[in-house]
Image 1: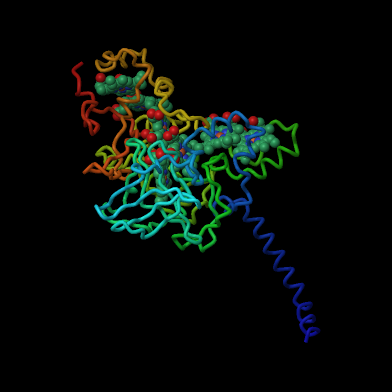
Image 2: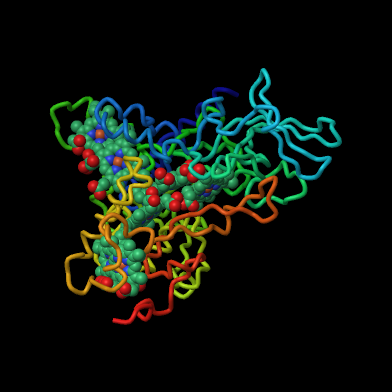
Length: 421
Ligand code: HEC
Ligand code: HEC
Ligand code: HEC
Ligand code: HEC
Ligand code: HEC
Ligand code: HEC
Ligand code: HEC
């Protein structure tokens, strides 16, 4: 029996070897083109931001202070912003239905009580959100992740309902999709088939922060090369966005700042340097929709920016023209205004409009007038003692002329008619 089988294998071995060889040659030939669109990275291709520290110390140091770096973390006392103190740790849906945030020996929990009786305790396993606006919380159930019903809302320093969930009942099964993880972390290894959502994730293979490799591609190969070739002064096997095309530079940010784009490939397939359109259906920026304020400011900096005249009428404006994402530049209006002035000469005669002349320190703040903070439609929460939803305020990236006295900040049809020249 065994002998016969051996003979059989031997007789087909050559054919199999030949087929394998053909397959290898085929894959190698495809490599250059196919690699760009369908090759996927795995957990082992990543080194983690800490591994970049030894050679890129300054960037590492400032990057750890950014909202990107803090966007997905393990649930520790240090990382959770809300209070667990009695009196400050409850959220009522109805007089007899509440959730209490509790610190227990085994960790932090959101606990549902009905008529004073404990119904369900849900462990807080991860914190999502740097806390600039707020933090939501994720909980493992086997290998799936769920978003917990209560969110911390920073502006009010209070617990609130999670955005988008019903106001009068507790929803405990809002799934966390791979897309959610794709926007808030560097990598999460799925262990279920790509078409299945919600996905199963490998608990041990989640790269928590939005780290270096999200914008530079997986770095293991780069590190091995630079370590083995310490005299080489150029970087190899790593993406420098500055060397990409304008669209690719924008794509590297639009993956997560492009609003509601729809994926056509499994999550985590796109990496910096590739073309986003090969992985997502991207809504064409419709100027009328943007001007009428129907694009949500949440998450769609890209859609809003590309509708702006600054973008359309200049050749190389990208997100990186204004932002240095290695640093936390939040609130630095003067620094950002300098970026405007690099293109808009404030000394030129045609800049001296009545409005501009009225402003004394004009070089310090172009931002509040031309990129006003607007209420988000999707990030709005119900606070315990308020009747209407409280929206997060987010800077619009539709750079334009706004009626500053108008609270909703709708752009005027024709800004120039505001003042008589
Ligand atoms: C052993 C040292 C070493 C480590 C570790 C290292 N790099 Fe580098 N890297 C270099 C050197 C050397 C250069 C070339 C000089 C420069 O641009 O700073 C470079 C260049 C770069 C560049 C610019 C490439 C270009 O084409 O201009 C990027 C981006 C980069 N590294 C990112 C990373 C990231 C991300 C990590 C961690 C995953 C990392 N590096 C880890 C040594 C290292
Ligand atoms: C993996 C998805 C992802 C990518 C890629 C990404 N961002 Fe972000 N970005 C986020 C998320 C999520 C936040 C909100 C983080 C938080 O507060 O928890 C954010 C926040 C920001 C902020 C606000 C920082 C602050 O202090 O509040 C800026 C500015 C920003 N991103 C710019 C960029 C630019 C420019 C690029 C491209 C070079 C980029 N991002 C690429 C997901 C991403
Ligand atoms: C949100 C995206 C993003 C993240 C995260 C990020 N970078 Fe960068 N990085 C960029 C962009 C964009 C450029 C190109 C900037 C420009 O236009 O010059 C760049 C340039 C670089 C360069 C080459 C130019 C220089 O400044 O020396 C190095 C090296 C580098 N990054 C290392 C890192 C390391 C190390 C980390 C993590 C500690 C990191 N980056 C995290 C977006 C990012
Ligand atoms: C398309 C990418 C994308 C997806 C998907 C996404 N987010 Fe975000 N999220 C962002 C960006 C970008 C921001 C930064 C604020 C902004 O620009 O609107 C953000 C901000 C947040 C914040 C506030 C962080 C702060 O600034 O304090 C929380 C909390 C949050 N997201 C939770 C979630 C949860 C939970 C999910 C999944 C159920 C999710 N997000 C899915 C991109 C995304
Ligand atoms: C890369 C160059 C560049 C940068 C940077 C830039 N702009 Fe522009 N901007 C332009 C161009 C080009 C136009 C169109 C021609 C014009 O009106 O001068 C424009 C138009 C405008 C307009 C008129 C918009 C309208 O709808 O009529 C305003 C207002 C404006 N920019 C403000 C700003 C502000 C504020 C900043 C900084 C946050 C900024 N720009 C950054 C290039 C730039
Ligand atoms: C013309 C300059 C300019 C360009 C280009 C630009 N931004 Fe911004 N961005 C700003 C300014 C100014 C702020 C407000 C900063 C602050 O108040 O801290 C801002 C804020 C943000 C925020 C935080 C919004 C909030 O209110 O929490 C995000 C996220 C962001 N930018 C992402 C991007 C992305 C992604 C791109 C490219 C698609 C981009 N930006 C292009 C100037 C710019
Ligand atoms: C007090 C609010 C305010 C501030 C601050 C402000 N602008 Fe304006 N800006 C306006 C208004 C209103 C208009 C249109 C009416 C007008 O022409 O007076 C305008 C028009 C513009 C235009 C288009 C017409 C033109 O004059 O070229 C540009 C470009 C512009 N601003 C850029 C800037 C830049 C750059 C800064 C910062 C250095 C800045 N603005 C600061 C309110 C402001």
